[in-house]
Image (cartoon, rainbow, N blue to C red; front, side, top):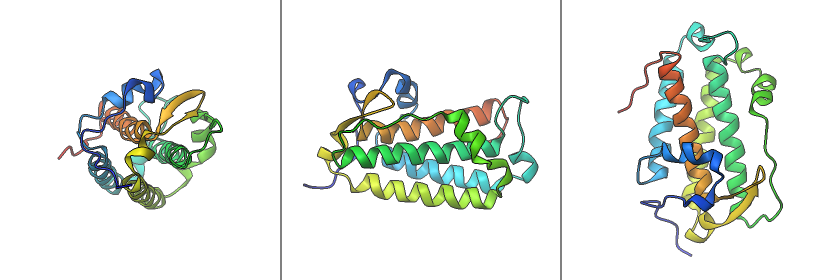
Length: 182
């Protein structure tokens, strides 16, 4: 089994739940691995440029802080990557969903240093790029069940990229944070 060329390898609608379609549609690049690499560099640079005051900013009292959004990105990527690993290895047991609000609440992200979140984000993203790059065509096509819906390994890679892009858009539009799109 040869390693996969991710070029033009988008998931089909039967490879993810309807809820994830918006995330998948935000990924315009033909190669999701390259998108994850570029996106990771942008987010890492963004975290590095934030002041503590900017990181704690909320555009409304009932919304997450910038730092909580970063923590949410880490948690969600970790969960989606775990699902991808399980499914790529042939796991047949349904994988659980998670309550993202509760995870952020329990994450204590505002009590952490930006440096610790930056280090965790960077290590996780690099590990996941390596993992997704190691999969074969057969492995990325495998489907399992997560959060009660069918999902493929390929779909999960796109969900990670699209979910992050969704939150970067929110940071730009609601939090008025400039993101370098080079």
